Length: 292
Image (cartoon, rainbow, N blue to C red; front, side, top):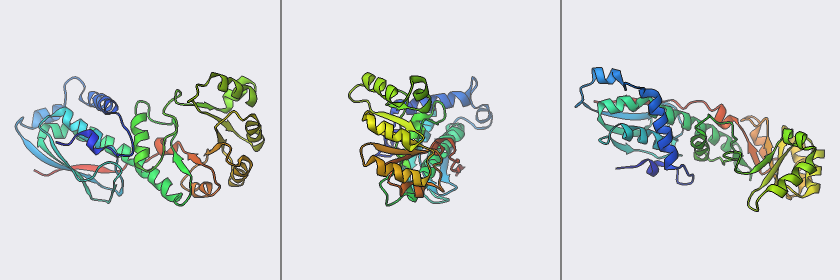
């Protein structure tokens, strides 16, 4: 019997606790107080069924552990054969899972399972497109904290399935000083000095700048490990790389789109982050077809 963890992308981590929590919340939302009254009313309890989860679009699959956990939560008699695992590229019409067992459980799980796979596969597919456009460069594509509330761990995992990398998971991961922090703290040097005095030896500090003059000020302090270059054009990004000479890691942010990502990658920055990977990824169309 396969388990949700056996379908995970091996180069990315998603906690079993996160899987269980997400599935529990999603099923609770769908089942309410009375359960699937349509299936209860129309399908005899002993009825068995076989179904196939199919990709209706080509893309990168993610979320299969969530789909499997959803099915197994509703019946211990569900049997699933996985044709692929997360992070696999699939063609339009390709079979992803074959499912057999109690018909009621399969029908009840259908929408929740498809929601997980469609949403996370959409994130993985969009990320893979960004990554493909930067092939041959050193730059890494990163997500942001612009995620669906309650689904951050899942969506960031999907980014990894698409070949991207994760930025902070939360406010407690690292110190990222934004323009408003600088304004309230009284300037770049004061805010960096306070951050460095507070940070533990394993906590990195990144600071956002809008101009090359601000970047120079950051470099002069020697107190940051990374600098976020906010909404800079290609020429300015190139000059920032030249000025820095590898002393800090550089991250391009703002205006990072499929149309701009290839040019950004040629500037020599180390990272480019895009909230669109998670907040604007289109759903990958998948279906569950019954084969009695």
